[in-house]
Structure formats: C-alpha cells, structure tokens
Image (cartoon, rainbow, N blue to C red; front, top):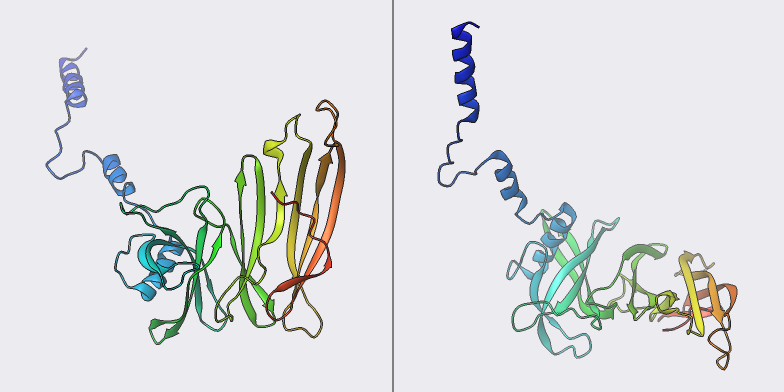
Length: 291
C-alpha cells in the first residue's frame, strides 16, 4: 500500500482519538450540557404566567415567586384574623365585557415558610375580578378565602358557566378519598355576588366505596352524577340539574359474610332552583350516598 496513504490514515486516527480539551471556566462542557442547564430553570406555562401577572396587580411583587405568592389573607371564618398564606393561581377567564377573573387556592404557611397541606386540610378559594384601565389593570373586586373546599390543601376543577342570561359564574368540583371511600361535591359561585359565597352548599355529585369493598363489607356502591344548567321560564337564574347513574350492592346486617350482596342498578334526577339566596332542591332526589 502507498506509504502516503498509510501516513494519512494514521494521522486521521490520531485526530479522532485525541482527548477533548476541557472547557474554559464558565463555559458549558457541551451543547447538551448547556441544554440541561437551561432545562434546570423552572418553566412556567404561559397561562400560569398570565395569572401571576394579574395576581401581582392585586398584591404587588412582594414575596412573588414564579407560580405563587406568599401574602397575608383573612381567616375563612374569623375575618379579622390575618395569617400568611401561599396563594397559587388555579383558573382564569376573560369575560365578554373585557374584565378578567382569576381563581386561586391558598394554603397556610408555617414558621419555616412551607405551605401546610395535609390530607385533612382543605383548599381555600379566593377570586379576583380586574378591569383594564388604558394599558393597565385595576382591581375591581377581591374575594379572599371565601370558601373552604376539597382535601389535601386543594380543591378540584373550576368550570366557567352562565348561571342565567348575562350572569357569569363558575362551578368548583371538590371532595376527597378516605380509606377507600370517596365523594365529589360541587359548589356554585356568582361573579355578581358582592360577598361571593357558595350558592349550592356542597351539593353531592358522586361517591363510591369500591376501594374499601371487600367480602366482609355489607354495602358497596358507586353513584356518578352529571350536571347542567337548564332554562327556567321567566326566571333570571337557570336551574341546576343533576342526573345520576350507578349501582348499589347490599346484604342484611345480620347476614353471614359469605352471603352474596344483592346488586341493583340505580338512577335518578335532582333539580335545584335558585330561590334568590341559594340553590334549593325542588324536584327529584339526590341519591348520592354520604361517606
């Protein structure tokens, strides 16, 4: 073989196996390392960033983090008592009239600066209404710690609804699981309500005990409800209507544990009408078992 060819191959092999020079101080070791460094920075999604922008209008930048604020809020019952809470945005809605609404969850902060979220603790709901004034936002209403909902320091999904023609509001689903028993409730809020309180009083939507249903259990069930608002002729507020399906299994209390439970399918409907103060049951029955 040509000696020049052999020499060239040797030089190429030496170049490929040459140990890479260490990076200069302050430079990333590689492009992939630089990417990891970028990814290590907390990423806030645009929706959360937008909600945080509006919450900073309410409270300023003090104690503001990327996705929460630590602020003083009143106790949910003793309104004259203030404590430090961690406030996190949950949902946002821009109304047809240009106003913006932010719903947030609060958890009390301990002496170490950590949020106190235990299984038995609820989430505390706050809501804020802002209106644009030129190129700035102004706070129109702030409803702080107005409801105690859910478990483990949080409440569930917020769904924006029309309670009637031109009456924006929202529903919150909340509940929890305890030793295999679970329940889901709904609360209703009217954005025109000056005191913003739950108008439904924790209406039961679903429950089940399948996680605790063993051979020795005398009763097992699973009942699920779906909700919707239906127009009531001549009324400013629509009716809240729940329709239920599920099953119920039971055997007599004095029966042997080896005796099979008797199963039956269940179904039902409950209609709630707004009476000017709250939603009250006017037709049917809420068949969701309590836990």
